[in-house]
Length: 631
Image (cartoon, rainbow, N blue to C red):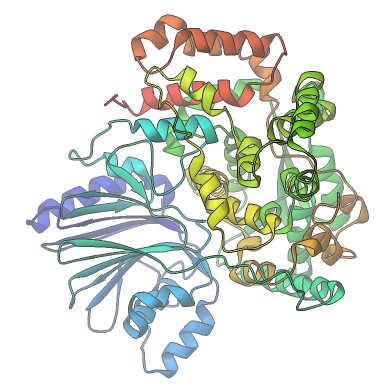
């Protein structure tokens, strides 16, 4: 695990290139406090900051092949590197280290850019092919590791984090207005865009080649779901899934440094820890977050502690208080790009807690997307049924749901009300539009009213609807999972997991996103994964007897903060300061009257606008911290 940076045709003088690369590396020291490596020639510069996990003493980067014609910098882990190494050695390749990074070098020698198709892991890497004068970049299939780049004419710069690119004087800090509208609509910015005009994200499952001044992008992998005909029975699928998950966890436990896990007491994290316990010769170390008695609904600490006791782990809990929001400016700088999912605060705190004891932590992230853990997936089946009801009747029912249900996040009833209101709004929409309605932070109309430069009739979230229609799947639930895996998972959930983990120099691994698990899911009908109102039906069946029954029978809780309550109480002064009308007027981006109305509606509990308000607060802190300019 580390951070990587690089330049292609940025400058002719190797010493100028070296200076720039060293400056970029300094911006991401937190990603790799153990080591630094640089490589610079006339047209290329590569750099890395290393967090030593595998082959601690011998895994220095950049790494070359035998004759120095291929050079690699790498961020992440290749879990099948032992098998790949054995095969490459049989083909005559000679290794000088025990690290997984060197496997990339020789795999590229053997297969060129197609080497990326053989890797099972989380990664972002760069290969410099000296003979062809070619730069090759790749990001892992699910987007677990981030990779950003800037293309200015024939010049290219890349890095694991945006702040390393902003260290280059040529890279502007001008806001991309369309991306800003997407952020307020969705809560994040989908790849390949970012909130900066000059900076792009390499999408998950894509590679980039720069050669002879030309830059080409290529999608090397897509999540393709099979036809909904069952290959195996439910029971066979259950047993196969248990075996695949167990293998994934065992392979991701390979480490030359101390390793632990995040444990919430939910199905996903408890399943991971249970498999870790099976494979461990010592007590597994686990870590969780909790809240005080005022916020019992959000407090998962008792569930985590019960699971830890049942599994015999060495467990630690951190109780979170509202004053943690004082960390916001610092955490937003570590994030690089704002997110409305404030669980990044909790991710940072639990990562910081874990880092005191271990260097690697396994996480249950990805289980919801793969196995139908979100209530919106149940909606897919419900909407299929409701689509047969006449439109006028659906709209009348929807209006009643919207008007009569409360949507305060402070209780389970409020959460049900929020989903009910969203369902009411969605009853007259297409499936893709319904998905967007449930996922959205603000409606397209609210975004237009908020921005001082509205986008008119363009819906900033329409690309998600298009992605739903283009999904490589037939069944609605599979299409929803596909869109999640291409958008919110890599560009929000995995992004905050990576950035917050690396901010504390902790490597976070996600066994549910192992290639074998992801490929398995695409081969089983969606009715196995969820049916009627049974979320994670197949996963729970596979974990029966592996985790305690009380975990399997527990109602789902999200990994979130009691931010709605905090905004009305403890954080109200901070919100008032950040969203002061005169301050917003000077900023020139938002309509102060719209913001004032949003705050009043939220305070009166007429509508839960927690995400919208936090989107504004986080955005303003980000704009101030990164000195972002309007176009």
